[in-house]
Length: 212
View (cartoon, one colour):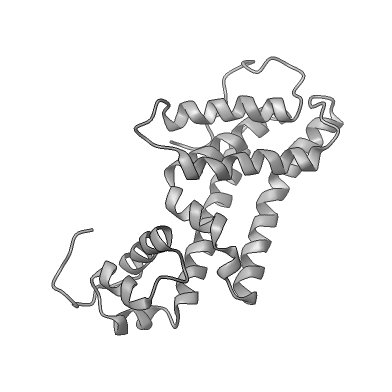
């Protein structure tokens, strides 16, 4: 991270949030102090308190912001998709995987630090997670009702598809053997297999609801 004059306050929350994300990923929420965040952001501790009353507020902003962003991405993809359950699930999975390959640090915090939120923050984040879950639930349930998907356990299938996406953030590398787009296509195929899609996996072009 580029450094300015030591201790010189910067405007806005962005440097503080970036430093917090880096520290939370490196050592975890509880092992990170406000002084660590201030050092990483090259600001004074006092200037952090101008934006955030506590470290808990920093964590909540990161996790709520991350969930809000991924919900926006998947909803946009879903609205741009075709009408069939296959097209809609493919669009959701594509957006889900691209988010977890492109925003890995925030996604990892979201996956590991729910336990560190206070009761209010946990309620907000769980509500957002439920909203995201419903998008997958609704598409997969409709696919079963229409006979496009053969799974006898649509809710469990939806959770499995979501959890596959969560896991990508922990190991994906941009310089690895597959690009984010290629990985998204692989996971579309895995998701369609999970729900028991009855047609050909490569049927038609996959929807492009989220720019990579």
